Amino acid sequence: MADLCWITFLVVLFCLFGTFDASAGDADPLYRACFDQCKKTGCAGETCFPHCEIPLDASSSDDNWYLKEPLYRWLKQANCQSDCQYHCMLQREKDRATHGFGPVKYHGKWPFKRVFGLQEPVSVAFSALNLAMHFHGWLSFFMLIYYKLRSKGDEKTCYNYTCLWHIYAFLSMNSWLWSAVFHSRDMDFTEKLDYASAVALLGFSLIISILRSFSVKNEAARVLVAAPLLAFTVTHILYLNNYQMDYGWNMKVCVVIAVSQLLIWALWAGISGHPSRWKLWTVVVGGGLAMLLEIYDFPPYQGLVDAHALWHATTIPLTYIWWSFIKDDAKFGTSNLSKKVK
Image 1 (spheres, rainbow, N blue to C red):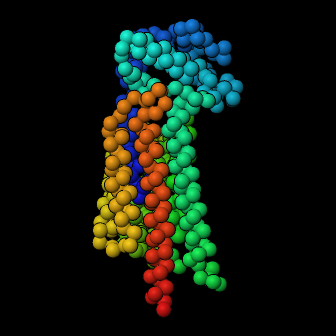
Image 2 (cartoon, one colour):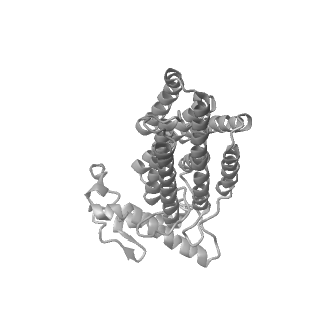
């Protein structure tokens, strides 16, 4: 449920970034002039980059010029294009500040200061914390299932959704991993991996919401429910990565999937009488309030912390509450099954 809220908004935000590539900053004639000069000379104003040995406007045969640079420079984002964009942006923002103007977006993003080569260091840190929180939640769930709720001498668990939550945990951690990578280095392949991971998590979250809310326990019935949704999710990912990165279509798909599972979880929380349903409501309401940070999109404070980074921060406690609900549900399901056996 936590992922249901924050991954949805994350994907939608990235979709919107994709549809608004032309920002006020990169449309600035002075920024463009600085970047054009840097492409030819390897210098942004008085700042020059010795590793810019191949011009950015080289012939088509040199389209993969960045692959010719040393790997450690590539990992540190020390390539000509990113350095030219970054330092021209810093110079323009410095000039704008001296004239009393606030920051503007460049290539769809606010101007961030790099820290150890990371483009958005605070978002990277919070993404890593979310990953750690999911790992902690899954590990505690694992310990609960296999060491506390399992009957002595019984090789199988009494909770019918154990395997599903294991898969969910893996997809969640994978999604936050690529979120951290994407925020540290915005490139074509990191963007695709981040999108694919987020969509995969959304698709599986819809499946698990249906299976748990409707108490689908029969394996054949689970396959009938999951197969078409899995097929659609995989097809959508392949379409984005291999045919066209259609941000508008991706946004529609993600919103439909997210709203569907939100309604399912919300209705189930209201009618199920689950003892921990208040945790579901907490995550739903908390995720909705966190969305306000995405709506109120303010520039980064000191070039480091923006609304999106703070939104990442709010998902950390929501993730803790969500995994707490999952563990409560495991106890609740095991208890009910034990009563039926008796």
